[in-house]
Image 1 (cartoon, rainbow, N blue to C red):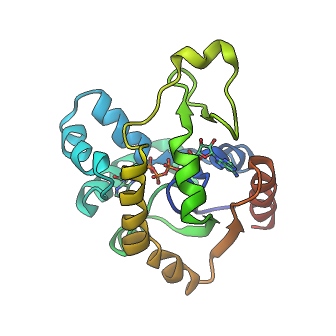
Image 2 (cartoon, helix red, strand yellow):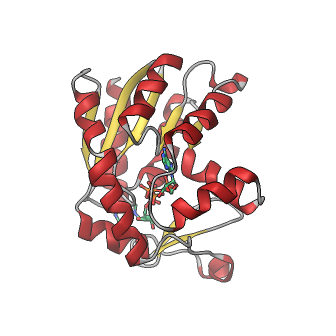
Amino acid sequence: MTGSIVLFGPPGAGKGTQASIIVELTGKPQISTGEMLRQAVSEGRELGLLAKEYMDSGKLVPDSVIIGLIENRLNHPDASSGVLFDGFPRTIPQAEALAKITTVSAVISIEAPDDEIVNRIVGRRMDPETGEIYHVLFRPPPTEIESRLIQRVDDTEETVRMRLKSYHEQTKPLGAWYSEFGILKKIDGTGSIDEVGQSVAAVVGSL
Ligand code: AP5
């Protein structure tokens, strides 16, 4: 399939968890704006210093910053046959800017209610060595790697409630925007990780 795929949904819906299935099935590289920003923070870059304030308080980083980041990333040769966007676009201006630089063929929207999201986010643990995402209850990590796992600084209940507010006000309307182009594919994200993965694979197979 030519063109790019957008993985859309609220924080903690399972975008990062399910991205690997889409990468495996399509061969498209995953571009996560959240990961790019966290990398800039950990390297102490100017972009990171700017973004950290927004991320730690659960607000969206300004559109101009994110659009510049994506424009640069799409110039890399691996992006020439389309990519998988994870966590981008998140506002209508971001989607409009994206439409000028690449074709979006499908938007896969993983949906889950706010209370479920809070439980998922506060129990999330990340492996800094492999990038693997775990959950203390829903996807427990192997005991031998437990000591090296980290919790994201924005994974507190207070911050996730702010992230959900940003999602409902600024990002959710983008679903309806993409729906008008007939490319929005909704997935129920409330099943187990494997069940949601099967739904994602079925949608990708139908594209
Ligand atoms: P970002 O890193 O994109 O965070 P997010 O959207 O808040 O998404 P998450 O990574 O929290 O959730 P996810 O859907 O990937 O869930 P996961 O698979 O890990 O953005 C961080 C910040 O950067 C933003 O707040 C903003 O400040 C800034 N930013 C980034 N992009 C931006 C943009 N485009 N514009 C402006 N600002 C931007 O799953 C969560 C947990 O649930 C895991 O523990 C997992 O194991 C578990 N889980 C997953 N699926 C299931 C399931 N089916 N059942 C049970 N548990 C599950």
